[in-house]
Image (cartoon, rainbow, N blue to C red; front, side):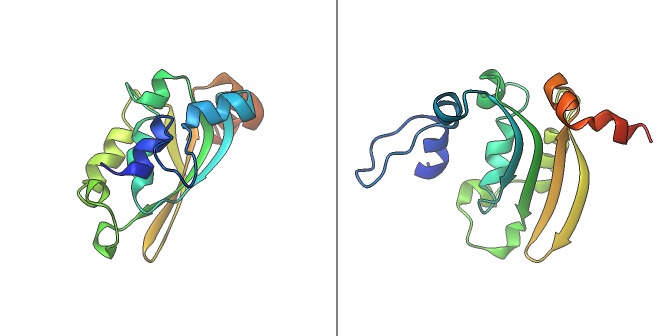
Amino acid sequence: MNYFFFAGLEDDSKNKDFKIISLPKVLDEFVHSRLVHYLSIDIESYEMIILQELIGTGKFANENITFCQIDAELHNPKQGGQHELAANINRIKWIIDFLDETSPYIPVFTVSYLPAHKVTFVNVENSECEKAFKIKSYLEK
């Protein structure tokens, strides 16, 4: 198991050099909200593992963590340098699962560049996201 990925899901004090705390705890203690307007994520394919936790029965979905807009840099699995948990992800299945009917996210922008593909997802179901960004007004045109 990768220490850094799982440390983001749970509090951890195993490392003596620095303390890693979970995303829910960071949001609760410092942001005082589990609604975040914007997330930019680029962690060498771990974004695919973490983003799955935002939908369906994922850990962050169950803890009511919501992002209104997500800019994700999705890495090419053939580029190398990825942990085996990320290297074996079927990218097509991942995107289909992430955009499943239970997901509140839809892609609205994409740009490809080596060695990654940048995708912007927006949350079209959360009323606070709609209030802040009026996302549906762009989709109706």
